[in-house]
Image (cartoon, rainbow, N blue to C red):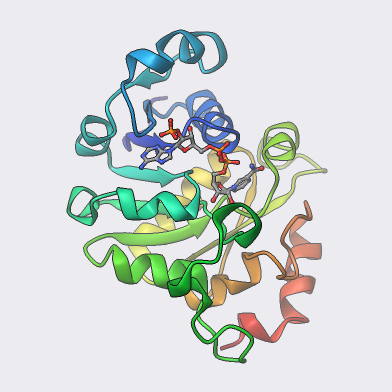
Length: 222
Ligand SMILES: NC(=O)c1ccc[n+]([C@@H]2O[C@H](COP(=O)([O-])OP(=O)(O)OC[C@H]3O[C@@H](n4cnc5c(N)ncnc54)[C@H](OP(=O)(O)O)[C@@H]3O)[C@@H](O)[C@H]2O)c1
């Protein structure tokens, strides 16, 4: 069965192609883009993401229902928010000063109990989009290797955090179809548990393990 939503994956580095492959296997039409000419990734896309369409980012986004941001966070300023307006945007990015450098906007309030999550800051920049944090907290190798169909005994969980219930439902559906039990968090703010330093970041947990880890972390409660 062909799913309705069309995906544009921005980023063809480590995690973008994995998300694209998983989505194609789940029946989503997928376009993939870098910041450059799609001809530059045409051959590699054919080889490693068969079925994905390499496109200019603007064209991929224009035709997409769901846009997956799989780019380094410091490159977000290159993306025109107007291009993403009206789209469901999956923020698969992490704030990683070691590779992104220190980004002032993402350092605000850091360390305090009320510090904002990186996706809240992304959402403020992309005010016309419905931003959902997901697919950011599992390494790209494992994200592909651990995907399992619904009901598999060793299926793992992926957190989904957003403020727009329709967008969250769409991304929970995507997560489920690509091979993970979606865990819907209260809101985008609660998605802080999914970030580096959070209780589920870098772990590939079953649903009960995931829920337990969240219960033990105050960030999911505020
Ligand atoms: N690596 C992982 O295991 C993993 C897992 C989950 C989440 N993440 C997060 O996902 C993000 C990407 O990580 P990565 O390891 O995949 O990075 P990466 O290997 O460095 O790849 C980044 C990709 O983004 C593209 N890009 C940069 N600016 C762009 C723009 N404005 N529009 C479209 N494409 C653009 C780059 O191509 P050009 O420079 O040619 O444009 C490149 O293909 C990071 O925020 C990371 O924290 C990573």
